[in-house]
Length: 295
Image 1: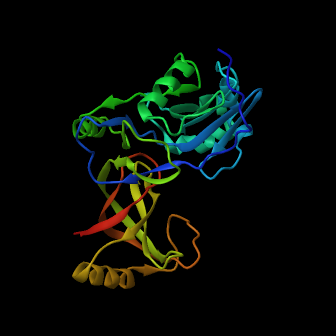
Image 2 (image 1 turned 90 degrees about the vertical axis):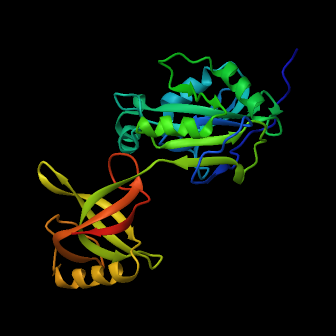
């Protein structure tokens, strides 16, 4: 049967999962590992293969190995949704290594495909998710050496799957209704559940961000001494918040020993320890908040 003639394809705004605290139960959901990288979209049309970022920017030149692999797929046209990552030696997403790999080692890039929006002239967005994914799996047929891989899933058992992912030290999971259609924008039929942890850090300064939110500038202990770790929203309340304000005044210095340069920051002697809730993962802190002062 001849393939349908495809119209000119372009970037499609992403379906965005909603962050929730718990994985959904029930057999109507499927669950994937949440890969820690950059959301991307591959658009294939004839000999043209383009790779777009979350905001629709064309980054094909930066993702050349993936674009080349896309050109080898057995289709005339397609739009594929997925996540661009770099893996560590254990096969886990290494977000901190991703930016450097894009610049200097693009051969390390892996695109985990999880949805198929168009294929050979057919708009699949109004087809059920499991149907789209079955056709995506058939399209990819990737071996372990390909930079395009299929993102597998489990059906049902969301809380148990999340517990196993948490034990593995991964970032979290994405849960999707098995019958969901693909709709651009925020969705309650796609959910993301992230793995959080708490760690101890030393405050070396504080600042107010562009939204007017107070931020603690943090350092972590290393074999060579304190090293910059990132910032965390100061979420303390009541007496603890007042106590922190007093300590910031008492420990104030003109400059930090970490040689950081941040306009408007107040620096303090590195004597104040805090407990911080943040997303699991190495490197700079993300989505972090100060939860308690430590004695």
